[in-house]
Length: 278
Image (cartoon, rainbow, N blue to C red):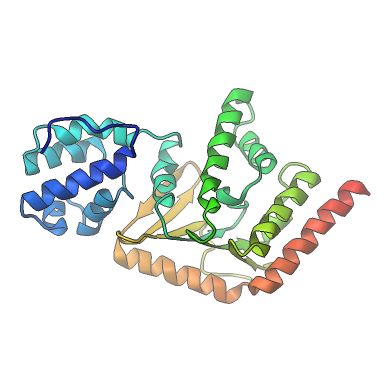
């Protein structure tokens, strides 16, 4: 193992993961064998190696001891852990950037990747009514930067199920809502995203507990992300991910078809636009 620190300007988490794989294989350990003394699964180690999970300092210390890497992972853990996102969301945002497919259920708000600037600003101002303009500006900038994922015409696959409440809940002004829904329709009509609306008439459904995101990767096991007020969990247990995948499948079965959903989104956007100019 080289004694140099990683260059924090060149995707430090991915580089740290690559170094972990080299050190683990040099020690003759499988992912499961390395995970056992850390009390984590082999898939968790795989996600560290793929860069879809961040390495926390307590793991870095134990890994240095187990792999005899002379403090390498402790020294570089700080650079790999830096994030512009809140702590409870950082791991999910970083994993999202590496995903080949993202499937998301949104019960209240347009997903962050699909928000317009004005809509995002209204959301953050509602979350933090006494924050400075500079704080809100930074939050909005970081959220909009995530949408760069959609600049690739095909990857990642983004499939969203939106509760009808997402369309009906007015965030900001009616003009902001009209713009936000038109932005959604433009992405749908450009065949960049798949969107289904779960109508109120669907009644009780499998995801009444809250939002859900599923992420798939080329070289790492899938993850499920669930969140509540000010907290979240990034889950890799295969049985748990399988359960949440079934939940998402049930949602798509209860939702309107993509064509019907597009028609509804356009209709609601038109209502907002018409009311704004009435």
